[in-house]
Image (cartoon, rainbow, N blue to C red; front, side, top):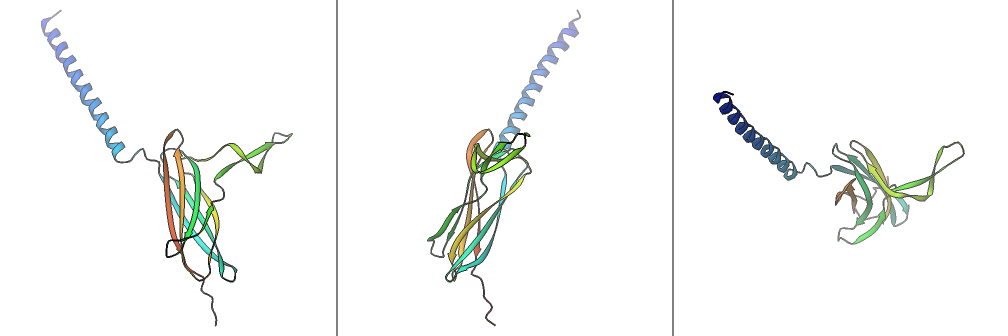
Length: 182
């Protein structure tokens, strides 16, 4: 073969090695950037609302609704969700488990139709929220009728394939109902 062809071939192979080095380095730098910027953190938003109802003289019910909206990255499993009400001194007034967190079991009838069983939890107890999904949980607490309360909701979850347990929180203030005396 020609001498110039051997020279061109060795220069091309050297260029290929440098091009691969630059490509792999760039891909690695991009991955490090994504990790440091939080790209792989499971995204979930929590929004709460509260409504206060008179239960009996001196005590109110506080109905709390937590709306969870899953972002576009990955699926999470919800492990727990609780609501807590504290007074202005930070003393816990009431704490309750949010309803709807656990996955329910079901039975199958003769026609192969599935029926929900409210009395039994499923073997795999966690609810999964896929990307773009939205759900809500409810909690019912008691609070002194004349005092405002700080309402806190905490949700624990984990990525579908493991990882660290993540925690999402939201809070609101529930003011006493104003009764019109006119």
